Length: 205
Image (cartoon, rainbow, N blue to C red):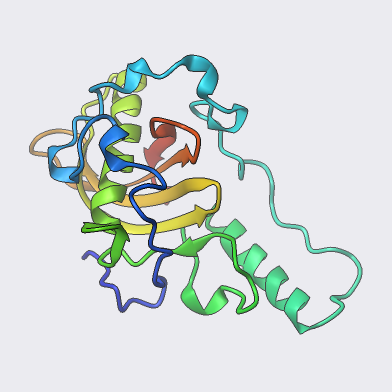
């Protein structure tokens, strides 16, 4: 079942104006249901890809959270340590609303999929379907698969100098196959023309 905006692991996103990153340049379409992730994505120069956007790179792999030896200086630091441990446990793919520190302005946080994400009328669900489809297209190409997106389940984002998204979604591995939970990570930095897929994989058990 697709989570609604009232679920505990989502919060209202920072609404970005279209002038910040025009959706029309994300492989040429505005809506997720009309996006073709293969169209136009090869036009971007290779050197625009950052080192942390190389396909298959998982920044959480082999990096378990280790709490500092010294005790926290105050309640805010203790709250941040709990939050950091929490998102490390899911490798970024789940951040409960009540775990996000009140004093933190940037960081990994759950996205309200049904709220407007880009003005005037593009929801988080629509834009994240675009990002997921870009990652799926790369995965299918590299692994010779035929995975197709069915629906977005949950998204954790990091907003700042762009959009980094940790997307949990249900997919079909064949036209008449059963639904399988997948994860994808994709990013578009503010100065980049296209979305960069980082990885796509079946969700861990």
